[in-house]
Amino acid sequence: MTAVASARTAVLLVEDNPDDSDTLREQLVDAQARVRLECVETLSAALARVAEARFDLVLLDLSLPDSQGLQTVERALAAAPHLPILVLTGLEDEALGAAAVHAGAQDYIVKGQADGAMLARCMRYAIERHRLLAARTDDASVWAALAHGGELLLSTASGPGLLEALCRVGLDKLGCESTCIWTLDRAGSAFIPVAAQPRGEWQRVADSRAARESLTPLARNAEGGVQWLTPALRDALPPALLPSGDDDTL
Image 1 (cartoon, rainbow, N blue to C red):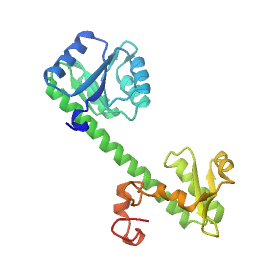
Image 2 (image 1 turned 135 degrees about the vertical axis):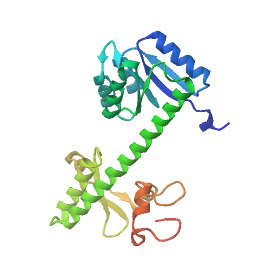
Image 3 (image 1 turned 60 degrees about the horizontal axis):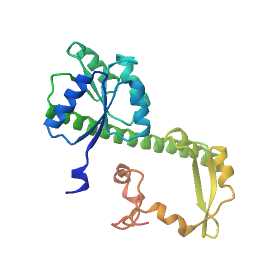
Image 4 (image 1 turned 180 degrees about the vertical axis):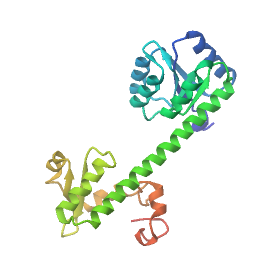
């Protein structure tokens, strides 16, 4: 059996009603769903757990002792935007479930209206939708940064001012903690820094040198080809901008 086949989906159930928790757990067991379920009864406990452990999905009841209604999903999304959230509602709260989806939850399930197989399927779909959305968001951020960098190149900025502006693109558009631009020295034997942001990063690297061969691994993948920031970028670039050769080696 492969590692992928044996992996269990890690799910955090946030539910303060023990009967509902037990019913949901039994349904998943009966469906033989490959799920590792952990239960907490308050939103504060849930936020603490997602901060210290890895989960694939959160099953979230919106009526908890320390949080009620739509603010429950909003607080959960703000604290753990990397996790898909599947909302649990009562029959009388379907409108609230729909509002939770508009707020950012992947879907909602009405308690008592889904068996274990349906619940497991909803969780798989929620995880996959969230993964695809995250990938598209990452690609959009990269393209926004590239577009902004292109605007800078076409502007009147030049020299050190342009390089500093490009470093700020990494901070502002890509969310990097620090950025640095290096170039080969005149001898072509070592890389030296020419711009960095924020200022503390420049102070850290200003006197640094890196042998040319020492940076080669950072630009190559495990197969020896180019390490692309995103596959979509490699596919979209014109052939003239790609490295020569079928294997994309630098």
